[in-house]
Figure (cartoon, helix red, strand yellow):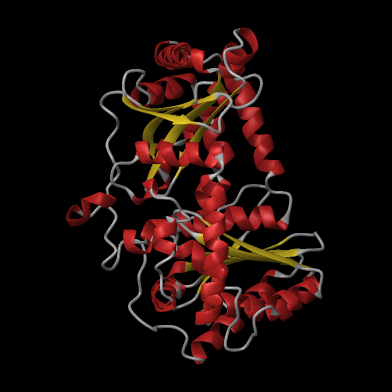
Length: 444
């Protein structure tokens, strides 16, 4: 067995193993009596066409509806009778499936976990039944003010990129999907070159890798691989990231003016304000660290500038937060506030002034030291459980093909100086050009 140790932090020691067919396996042993197996697939809603928007999430549901070897419900029975847990999630850039179990049950459950992910039958009758479940999930999402606000913000943020679409898709599309469309989508995207398998827990590394390799090789012997043209980021008719012929997949340029969208939402008691800037995504991760720190300085925690100014001192908002969101191709610097409608103009102006201050005044040493401590501690706390580490490794390897950015994150943050933060604010966060979504409650 050929294995390569990647550069790691003092807390982490993952082993990376690549099969000739392109599948990547990551394993790490931890002295915790549990083990997590996560299967990451580079297929989220961003690879869909408009006519099948929502199929990746719908497929996540159908994966658990039986295989040629497992009846519907049998996988869940195999998991539950061992006291294990399983679940899945779909995003814009990926879908992942995981199981957490006792170490002694790992070898028994791995083949079944891979079977449901790689060999879903997608039977017609189950497809129609599950369609109703997905449609109800969409309805609940549309009834959720927080999700409605987020979706309106994404549509304002992106004019062309598929990130502007909902991961769940619209009801009108889901209602018309056919089982064969899903089988074709699965055959195209669920290929070894698009999959990262991660095992973290109290199983020896060599044993974890051998168990996963044996399970995948069985799939190969059964003819699973190669059922159609391989599709991955950058290949096939879906478009090529950065290809001039498919410019709708290029990162969108920064806003050149204030782009404003206003809505009325009868379900709200208070208004919502979102301000956002287009910034580097994961493919330009080296340019994103400063923005992570700036988001924390502005609006993460009770010591952040916007919280202390707008909530504690002036009491203009009931909630405010900031995040530097990183999709694969492009990120968003995202500020969201909940506030009385009469404060919308004043709060937007105040946020602009805070941005301007970041451009003209160096962040204090005390703030930087506080953020360095926070980042280091959060990294430690986020590395405690097998599922934490499996998610960390799976996310970065799946999205970037590289674990180093994950493992070196604290060092990169702690190396930043005030002048770096100021330069990033000047480059990416214009107080005069951004997207803004204002959602007002209906007048009483």
